[in-house]
Amino acid sequence: LSIKKVNGILESPTGTGKTLCLLCSTLAWREHFKDTISARKIAQRMNGVELFPERPMSSWGNAATDADIPTYYTDIPKIIYASRTHSQLTQVINELKNTVYRPKICVLGSREQLCIHPEVKRQESNHMQIYMCRMKVMARACHFYNNVEEKSTEKELIESIMDIEDLVKNGNKHRACPYYLSRSLKQQADIIFMPYNYLLDSKSRRAHNLDLKGTVVILDEAHNVEKLCEESSSFDLTPYDLASAMDAVNVVLEEQAKVVQQNEINAEFNMELASSGLNMELEDIAKIKKILLQLESAIDAVELPPNDSGVTKEGSYIFDLFAEAQITFQTKSALLESLEQILQFLSGRTGVFVNTSGLHKLSDIIQ
Image 1 (cartoon, rainbow, N blue to C red):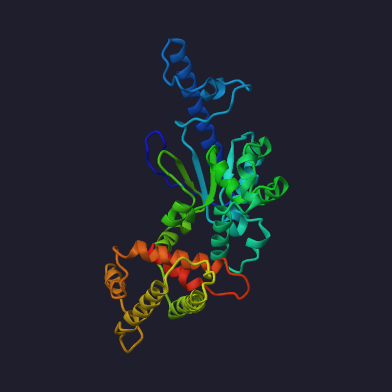
Image 2 (cartoon, helix red, strand yellow):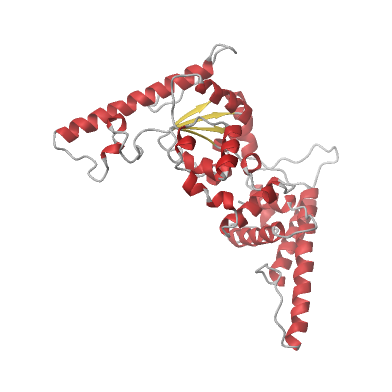
């Protein structure tokens, strides 16, 4: 299938060993493919042809010696093995451990599953974990993240076949962030395991920096793929989401207004100006609230039939609806930047919890 660059669908009853057959046959093919290229390169080198003069001998697959500095093929396809859930992937990885194959592997997961930073783990929502993690990483304030570059070359981590639980366990052992460790191990992995929503959702692909070009993709337990494709191309935005978003913006407005008021007093007495930590003008925050109010009004203005059957419109209608709230392709970038700043500000606050789920959902929709 890979040589002919075509897709295939395999169906077999439960318990017939589909998973193990897929794993072993694919890994065997990859090893054969690697050996074939290795032999060809050696033959070309012996004939005086330097096909890759800048590459050390260690890039020649099985022909390299143990003393060589390890480098990795760029012309050997990676294998992406995807299933519906991480629990199913754990079963697959456990089956792989019982085979003769020992490929370099990596399993991708979310911060919610992999983060070991106590403060980030305490956050009440996955969105808040993401923003707090990003802030700490940018400020180099997470010692687990700071250890990743050094620990990612540890032989135990590179050569071990680890599922999600093993990754967290070894992350704690080596004091290195399992989330960023998995992203680092991905670069040199022969086979990458992930839930298939990571592949099918464009935002997830961007978040995990997944490039499918030239890869062999296996979708195990794929009977839910059609439904997942529909879900990844859809969204819902409820009145509660908009109300939640406006409440969060109101909190920021009030705090920023207090800072502005305090600075007016400080300026009169030549005192140092206060800062909330948010680099936005009061007017810009008010514009975000205005956009939310306009979006709420635009949705309320949609006429519904009396029988509660709902309204169905062409897909392009969503752009017209958003345009009524000044959300267009032209304003998209500036709006997303403002939402990002507000969310980062709220995630960095200590004390009172602010529900940011509505703002997060709106940001995801606009993206």
